[in-house]
Length: 399
Ligand SMILES: Cc1cc2nc3c(=O)[nH]c(=O)nc-3n(C[C@H](O)[C@H](O)[C@H](O)COP(=O)(O)OP(=O)(O)OC[C@H]3O[C@@H](n4cnc5c(N)ncnc54)[C@H](O)[C@@H]3O)c2cc1C
Image (tube, rainbow, N blue to C red):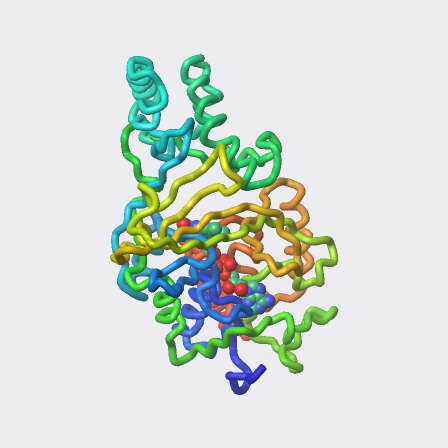
């Protein structure tokens, strides 16, 4: 490895996804010299986007749509590139029909006799007065039998098969928190997300990351695994690249690897991503079509429909096949498997890592929790604010 940095930085950030890039930017804005090290050979984390051989921009680690209700995150992210308004619409293949997902009144009317569908719509409106979205659990657990039966229908046809594929386990073993996130729309709004801001970067995510990391105080090097340079010493100090490092260390990778998996491996789900380029204008009716029941894959994404790129005679699609994650087998850890047992394993790592008081865990992998992009950005903004505030207090107290 040819080192592209000189001297000792004030801050080291491991990982150049949103958590790392935003944390780096904030520290750089505060006047710190920041070194960002990314083990992949590109920046952008799972949002990384590139143009394929057909000239179509693809999301290399699966489709990413930016959505948030958080005004601060929205304002922040707009500084780093041009964003287009984009309303994500998903269809699901249910009983041989392509219907809107989340399940809404159009889905209801496509799959139920019209008279029954209309009766249910009126009842749902009356029961959940003023609400535009409820969860499938709210329906299933409702005391009205017809509503509970509809909830069960949505659960069985839209959720059960998809979730079993996604998590590789019977649906009853899936954590309740996952089930409680499944929405049902009480109306014909067919947007996948209900958030106030729904955007796609006009020039792709990679450009946003280039802009985020473009700062006089930031040096960023890709293709460097921090674990090859970092030693956590038993006395609570750390060495980086052979020297004592007592600056700020922000880590966005897997926490168990920091301690050589001493308590066991944190479990994740992975994906096999199968891209295919076809010599035709269009492949499907929406940018994403879910396959909850048939097929081994969970969904197909058609990228042109996601990015708005205009290309004739060619289109690229992606099929996602969920699979188990095995550490050190060249797979990506995509989804933390959220349940009580795994949370306590994570907490063992978190507690043990508190010994190094200049080490901060940030983001989807490091905190072992599913963050959407806006959540990862917000977390990085809050963490860096916290670190800078702590430093101010220590300086004032002359500690
Ligand atoms: C298939 C899929 C689809 C998704 N779709 C959406 C969506 O539509 N909308 C949405 O809001 N969110 C989506 N997400 C969530 C989104 O990917 C996360 O919110 C985001 O990746 C969080 O950013 P991060 O920086 O925490 O993690 P990451 O993006 O994973 O970045 C972590 C980075 O750290 C690097 N790293 C790890 N260990 C080391 C090390 N030892 N040394 C150096 N570098 C290291 C990794 O290589 C990686 O680049 C999706 C997630 C998946 C898996």
